[in-house]
Length: 86
Image (cartoon, rainbow, N blue to C red; front, top):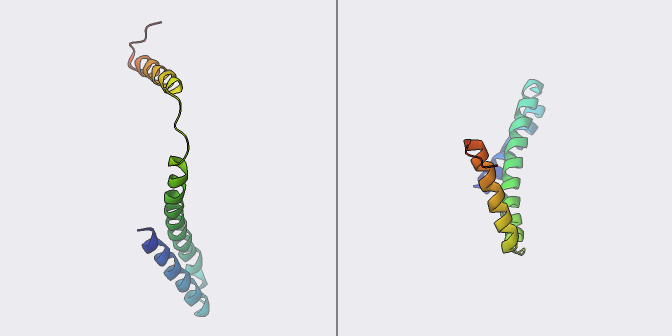
């Protein structure tokens, strides 16, 4: 799907060139919003898959850190639910 968004961004880039050649300057800011939106979304989707590979290659947190985190999250959840034991 990111490739379709990048293609749409390129297509709207050509429509900006077309609008400039026809001196239709009022539409250019709105077309640039489409260009920016589609290209940004497409490239960020591609980048997210690339960075996911880097993230999963890192070492997982230690079990002690996970245990502390789970106790902290459980305490926060109980406080939010009004069942906190102090």
